[in-house]
Length: 397
Image 1 (cartoon, rainbow, N blue to C red):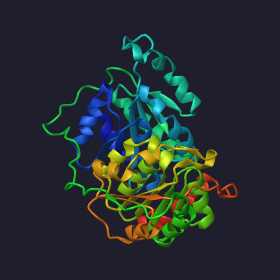
Image 2: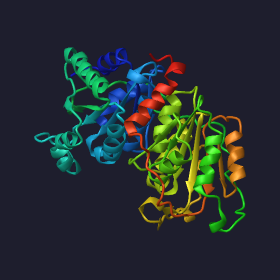
Image 3: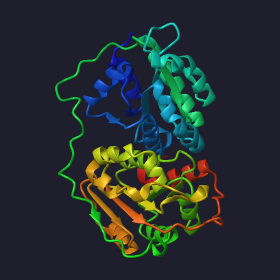
């Protein structure tokens, strides 16, 4: 067995400063250690996929793990199911590396609860199927450094994740000081959501195209990053104006917000705008809680809600029954707006920062967009272009 500090300090020497995940009893020593060290960041996420997306945002912040540090996603193997989408269509597609610590509950031959039996048997096969190389988590101090070196070499060479599969009893318990488990302190009580009266009939609402033009006009290339949700949102942003500060997500539906959160936390010098969609937001509403708890002032969450899954044929979502602004306000965003007035969103984009992240929902009209072009630049090239664009300001060489 090893001590928590044996691994965490060896990881710190290799610039692993960021941790995100969902707790498992096997992981408690690391979580306890990170929570009590102010120089480390541990973020408790609503689900494992959000943790992967957040650490992907940290990776997006800088090249080669510097100067912003590397990230680790921690999860029980039962949570691999929640993480499959971002691991296969975000980190793999964009080449955003991270270290995974996955606990091996239900390992064959090791007594465990019945709900872990199947996942325990197939965990190695799942990692192999996702093309994620893995090895057993080191159980001896002398094995820690070589394991981390193999992981970082793979991450640096391929831009892809590497997994350490942790067996039961690998790490000794780590004591917790009183208050270490306290939830993030909410800032002063968030104001009530601002729900502007709907001025026009649904068919007369602004188009997504018009909204994206407003976003582009108010997101300077030198100081702003615009991350567009998967589907037509990213394709239409590309058609409005393809700029080096844009990232067009493909797949990993619902992950644009935790991705943006990771980037905004790691790059407080940049203004990060997350362009969300109603279907995507509904899929991962736990991200609202994460942004309310951890979201920094430089993160703006803009939900463009047309009430349909447009890229798949216009099937209706349930968004007309949901007050996203009230959800955001209840989750602790610094402000929350809902409107069908594009001028209100323009003013929201122009407003000065607050003590926390801001949310706005713009109701747009549904429209067929069959002629939208697909980006001619590949996802990994979009990522590389964005990172290189902001590298000089970050001191990256």
